[in-house]
Length: 285
Length: 338
Image (cartoon, rainbow over all chains, first blue to last red; front, side, top):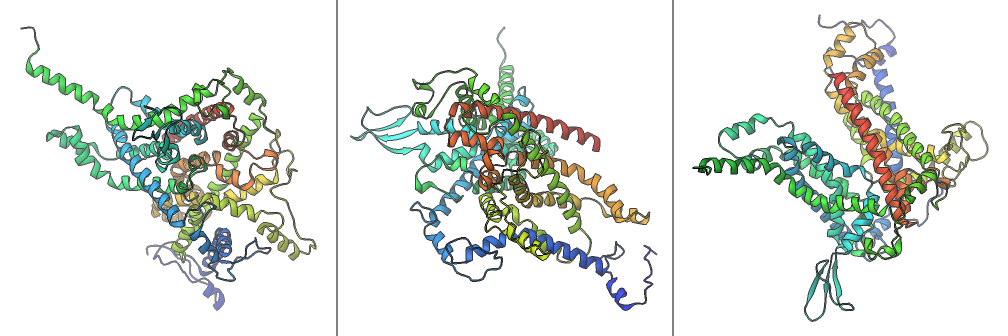
């Protein structure tokens, strides 16, 4: 006999029904029907608590009234798509369409994810594999910016990006400051880094980068060193080892890091988006 | 012949290349970070010693009106000399720490209990429940904060309506109209002796609880899968009850996975800008502000850039201290487990 099961002594059919073993495992812990039902009720209560604000949002979005409802409505009473239509046509007070917002968010998130990934994988490989003198110091330097609040870095970034402008000086001359400026009084600004999506993307890379380095370094630490040693014996130098052996092996974690960076930047932070004034460069919030 | 032979010269070149390879790999990352992180950091430190204001924004540090005021900004922050109402640095700091600690203390046990609940063998619709419980993480934070602010509204909020129906069920006559987000009086007067906790704190705790336990349950579920079932079988053969099995098997084996999650949750709660700012705006008379919302206010609304820079530097050192302490804690517990 593998396990010992208590004999079902009761003669009452109701109690025997309630004690049916609902656990589908053989020989494991048994789950009588009454305990299963009690657990199900508990899970449903928790699900109600989780879904409650979400149902609130769904109901509100599907109703066609203009003001806040005065009573608690959780189940959508009417399905009216006026709110959705309004969001898609004119989401904010600025004259941008929903598809433009979507495009901006998407471009930014993908761009920031890719750029931070490419830069981070190089640095993570250096921290993970090489032994050099300033390794500890440089590692701390890379992770330290995560501790500074984003607001703290916003103002200098704003000023620095403001100073990178491309102005048309009239007469065919183009000045790219801060290297060259037009004469005083001339010059129509064509492109201001502060006011563009690229500027916002650069600001977003500043937090995405340390996180990506930390993530990738942790994963690269788990790749066995014997593979690289075997390649070195066969005559590969460091660059070849990196590009042809380590990089393909690290692809799953690269995908995960890209995904995390994408999701993290998709929702946007108030400190980042506020540096761009032009309505064409607003994103989802 | 005193000159170095060809072979030795080649070897020196190869050695040199090998020595600088790691630095070459680091160059792109540090180049980017030098511009977008280190330069603003040093800039802020310099600004924190001046009285930078909006009129200086055009020229930056080269502005003529910029005066160096020494450590006046730092002294102002520590002694409350800023023109901001209800600002006492140490009160805000203790409130921030208390907020993070109580949040984590509620989220982690709840997450563990729910994860264990969902892990019961033979539970029906387990996968549906697991997917459902992830939903709070996916909702954008601004939407979460706005919805919970609506729920805690004094007139039309769902929480007050729920309490009204519950109290009428027990025979009360008047509707419940608690002013969650505006009330000044503290229900527990002696809690936090240097600044009593208003009702808005409890409202934010409930909202953050809704948002916080799914992540802990997720981590705990992952860790629970790695506990071998034979341990439970052996324990039940020896006669251990379910509760004893939980205490002696589940909890110790979950600990290595839950400790990094706890620390991450602590850091997240400590810097939780969204819920605090968008739900209560800092609470009645700024009593619920945490450090990062104050920094945001100093920059956006009050435009005291010098004081804001000093504040950011101070927050940086507070975060650094916390980071070092938690680092020491995780290393200590890792050694114990291993």
